[in-house]
Image (cartoon, rainbow, N blue to C red; front, top):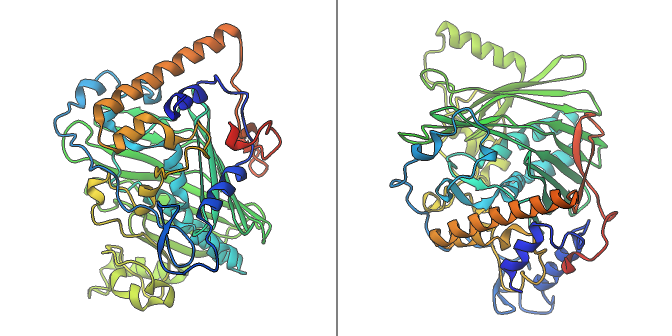
Length: 478
């Protein structure tokens, strides 16, 4: 049986008894493939004839996709969407032209692109600085969506994804635990046992005639183990405009509340809608308050560029002067002060900023530069480009339900659009057949790595990682 047939059977439940609750087995095997003999030369070289290894023993990830992005200019979007106004798009089969070659499980993994912000939070002794770093991480988690107008593939029920990045210091695992409604659960932990990051997401997608809106649902939880702290929040609403005619553009809007359940501190971030003249496009403003509702600092910036913080008094003074028309001289933009702000900023890539810098502000986060050919790769970041990488030897290690083994995504990535479309239709049809078979036999779907429960901090319904408790077999045997 080839890998594609294994994927079909795995995600449709024909091998559902072969489930595992942990991902360390496969990750350890991947690590063994990449481990170097310390007595070997430290120069960059090939290992096992394929993987390029750097001097520090960490492998290099690919920097481009196998084929450039296809053109959507000849496709009539309206011919499909005119039947979908006001409907939930997750229940509608969409043509592959709308997609990008990643599963939604892989898109969720992009939360980890700016993991250095979690590490920074772990290192701070001051709870205010920890909240600032967590707030920056929450904003950075949606930054990769900038100019990403392609839709990730809907995961099939039982589809999984796992990733270990030793260079970044984390493990990540996710699973599609429900199909109707579509729910994706994920769990990540630091390799130094310093944090746990988990949650479940079930966005509602709706088409409103000229735009497609993704309303976020589900709780995101970050636990800083050293400080015995837990933070929870939900993502802002995402909307893609001009889906019928004109240039596609994306915005995030809504209020995000990040709660520190140990100290009672709260960060309230307002992702501002574009507005009539676009003045507020991409802007984020908010504040951090203690348990007594005293404002400790103000946060401002753009989720597409950078995030700053300053004390409330300085911020209010600046806003008053701005309204009065005082200080007519042009203040420096954040770009002018980035390089001299602190040593931390010196290592950040150069990006043209449009955020008005308030003197005395501290930089919290700045977006990474994208690859020079990003526009030909669905506007992927360097991190996103690496997520569907499938190297020699990995197929024998990964679970057959892993996203990397989906033939429709793989063919789309390779530029074989007709084959990808047929494979997508074939997978979806087989999933429908499996669902009917389970309904006929009155058999309920059994998840592999997660179980439904209650979030211990919010008291709301959540999907929790099962650990090794329901692991009847080794991951590599699934």
